[in-house]
Image 1: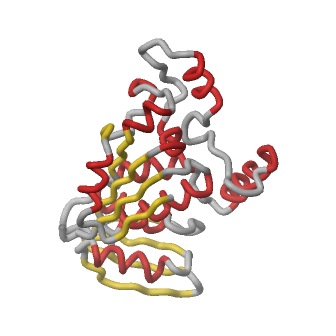
Image 2: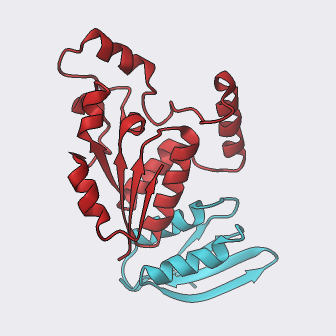
Length: 158
Length: 75
């Protein structure tokens, strides 16, 4: 089976939508798809209902509050205009019956897309494993991305 | 008549493809699925993706902008 490996770096709403549209299209055609969430991208996998188990430093707490929490939180990368642009895009998506990002992520999971989190990013962002949703398959290092990409037909950095 | 039918009219990229794949995964091997939609590119892309997956596309028909794709799950 063909294979796709995607690095989800930005975590922006528009770029995340593009990632999941590609991932779901490939998975629907029977491809093996792996998404590596790194840096800002890992915030998409946070679950607002879950909390850290170990105590956090003040900076870690601040970062946790400032970064988007979960798939409903990210903003578009251009024309956000203090959130007006993001609301406008979400409204247009509803009008066109495009699923929200959170639903696209559930579809991806159902079609067998693998969700991997870069554990270094998690440490840099001051987040802990317990804060992520059950959609995550594993916490890995760059070696896993390299070996997953070795035989990939496409690899994207988004 | 197909064993199962899904209506994806009004849905845009990549939803017809995703809904077809999700539905087919839940069906038994040998059963047929009819997909009815109106998203232009998906008329070509749904049969293409299902063929790549190793499924059998039995027919593709279109009338007045509504297409019907008939697929048999073979694997």
